[in-house]
Amino acid sequence: MFILLAACSEDHCLITKVVNVTNINSQWNHHKKLVQALNQYQAHGTLFFYSHNQKLLARFYWKQISPYHYKFLLTNLLGMTELELEKKDKLVYIYNRGGKCVVNEKNAEKIIYKLTGIMISLNNFSQWIMGLPGDSTNFSLDAESHLRELSFGTSRAQLHIFYLGYRKTFDGPEMPSHIELHQANQCIQLKLDQ
Image 1 (cartoon, one colour):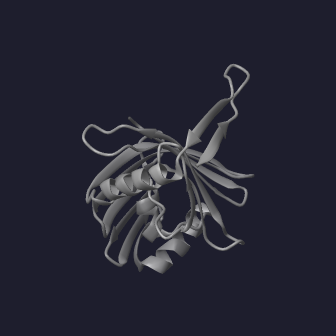
Image 2 (cartoon, rainbow, N blue to C red; image 1 turned 90 degrees about the vertical axis):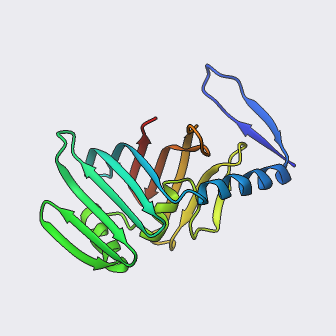
């Protein structure tokens, strides 16, 4: 067993909760299997990106058609497409205002880095948006057996992901509702619509 302490603002009291590690592990395994069983998944919401010299507020749309086929669309507040990405097997189609290109996965990550300044693993992003650790072995769970945070990458370009909230779905497992990705002095906040 371990004790979970949660410090809150002055309006709330300190919460102490005793959590059984065995229960967390079995609940996590059950939750993980339910999420992994989802072949199709859609999410949309607000994306806020900021760094020391740049800020961006946009809408995003994520659609996973199969485990190896997904689409990501980023629009500005006027509804104009800023970035569209579609991954089919090992090929990635990237469209932005500058045109379109078709590349393999590794080159796509480099192009996304040039466009956004953040190195994202495309293989893992489809897992992270669903609340799964992907290839990361450095992660922790919350008291409800959901992913709470994870770290990915080398120390020079390490990405830290924090899951700040989950939402109930109609007939499936609870899914992330608020995710933050931090890398160096940059941050992406994803707030998913209910």
